[in-house]
Amino acid sequence: MSIPLTADASLHPLVLPARADAADAVEFRELARVRNAVYRELTGRTEQDLTPEALLPILRSRKERTTAVWTVRVEGEMVGRTVIDIPHEEGSRVAIASIELHPRVWGRGIGTAILPHVEAFARLHDRTVIQNWTEQPASEGPRLQARTGFGSVPDDHVARFLVRHGFSLEQVYRVSRLKVDPDTVRHAEQLRDQARASSQDYRVIRWRLPTPPEHAEGYAWLKSRMSTDAPSADLEADEEVWDAQRLIESEKRVAEMGQIIQVTVAQHVGTGELSAFTELRIGPDLGATTHQHDTLVLKEHRGHRLGQLVKCDALLSWTGLAPESRDVITYNAEENRPMLSINEAMGFTAIAYEGAWKKELS
Image 1 (cartoon, rainbow, N blue to C red):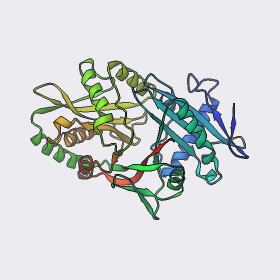
Image 2: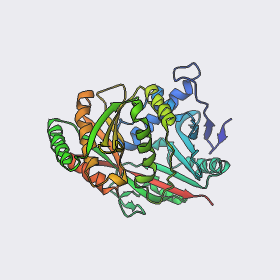
Image 3: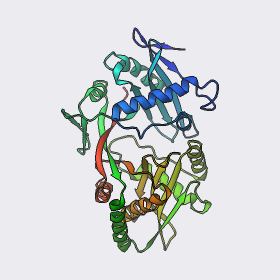
Image 4: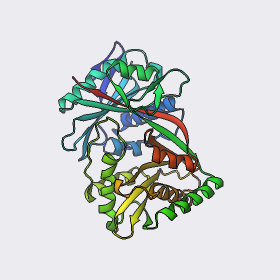
């Protein structure tokens, strides 16, 4: 059933198809196309594009969260989408929501009309906080500072919309790109060797998903620590519970998406504990942009250059797995100076910024 928004815009709940190529998947495939078009308009880049086959597993509800999807139409034409995730972590009071509209329909009051429906859905699930991560177009104008004091985003149409509706800018993520060429590789070898000198009590282990059974428990523990040990400012950061089964289900989705993930970990030799890790990810096109996803050094193992060790080792091995991928993209909180310092030393340069926003519901 459609929900009227403005004189010519409406909101439509989307029932996900069983398969992206199913007979009833026409609307979903159009959603994937519009999603990619919106991201391209906002970022000026294409590396966030997803095929319908890759997008479908992301949007399905799962044991650890409920996901709801709506399409937005203007005079019958799809122009955007709204997605809300309701985490199932114990004690969670947050809904993670996004309103994504093509810029050509901005300024018509559509986003403002959608927001009450987002808030009603959050309240229906007993949530009192809405959080949102939004990358904004580059701008030379005024900036809005994050409450952390680290980083800023353009004070543009997107920021003004969020501030006007009660959101605060809690944190800023730096989007960085590394150009991969022979000079980058040689420099990464030098940095890896430097890190080895400070981490002689550790060994490096790598695998491509699926995770070997002997490392599943340790890797799941590292994944769970991403929700507590990484900088999160004053955002609601639910402590995620990862076990072998959650790991298996996550890796099934990666396979369904047609993507490859290489995990590089540092293992403490004396105890066998997995102490640090990083993930590199790419889709079926091995010449496309590589994405560096979760990267973490456990608090109790910091001070041994393990972040530098695993990131450099991962890059060097990745050039053999995906030699035609000529760049790597990564996101880091602006206050995460240790990780940003590693990135800068490797040659990553900032290309954009993403705001993490929060609204307390009255």
